Amino acid sequence: MKKIITVVLVLVMILSLASCGGGQSAPGNSSAAPDNTNAAQNNAANSNEAQNSGSDPGKQDPGDQQEEKGDSIQADKVLIDNEFFKLTFKGIENPDPLFYNVKLKFESKNTGNISFTDRTSKLAVNDIKLVDPNSFIHLDGNDKDIDLCLFKSDLEAIGVDSVDKIEKISFSIGAYPNKQSLTHYDCEIYPTGLDNTYVSKARAAMPGDVSVGETPQFRISAFWREGSDFVNCFNDMGLHRPVMIIENPYSTTVNYAWEDFTVNGVEIPNYYTGYSVNLDPGETAIVPMLMSIIDKSELESRGITKAEEISFMFMVRYGDGTAANTTENWYKCIMESSDLHN
Image 1 (cartoon, rainbow, N blue to C red):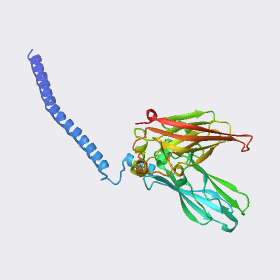
Image 2: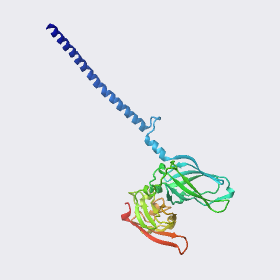
Image 3: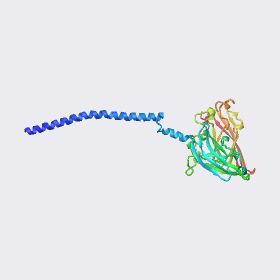
Image 4: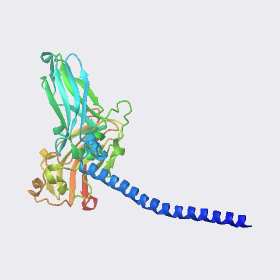
């Protein structure tokens, strides 16, 4: 009996000691866990602070990398190389708030046997034509570095708000090799490397706009920065300007022209607006409503501070060019205050 009691007492003592040991270790683990958590939080905070402040030169904020990618494109791709000249695409730069500059290098091989037209033609970005005299390049047969300027706010109308969204640039150089008949040399540039996979987005890429008019021979809509009155778009030296989006749904090439552009009944001189464009079936063009005005003070000088009504005459001409088979129609297009963003 004594042996049994002795064994029981020994077991009780062992259990008691084990219980005391466990009680001492638990507080120790409990205090260690918060220390590790705080250390991890402090490290994460320090890491974020270093990235945001730029104090760690070995790491870059992903946002900075994207911005750098969208800011410029470097390239060295030969577009044309024939017996007369060589044209090389060198990249795209974003030097000021108005334009993207497409860098080209022109090298002449035989200036004595070739002459050029006064400008490039059929300029398009992402298969949308751009009608803007500032975007033409002039060649005289001499070696030169060329900047092909793309007006940024016009590209907004086709959903392009950064360099990396310029997926295709195309244009044509007119020249007279051996000083004989006119030859067009077509150029296609794929800045982001999509030449084998590019699919035209065309109209689907455009943001919302204001419908102006539609017939079987044309569709016209207008676009300017949403939330801005037509006149106020010309703030900040033309960082944005209203444009017309002209589409040709017809089965043949159509010539479009416009004149007598008025705002609130005040006519804008034709030298600001008197341009035209030819569109093949299915083509779309972006055309500035007021080509030359880049500052709203030019509108205010005519007493125009807020647009209540915008109107212009729009001409549609199609046929084979002969008097008997050519149709020319004029339409008056009007956008009233209910159509305008503000």
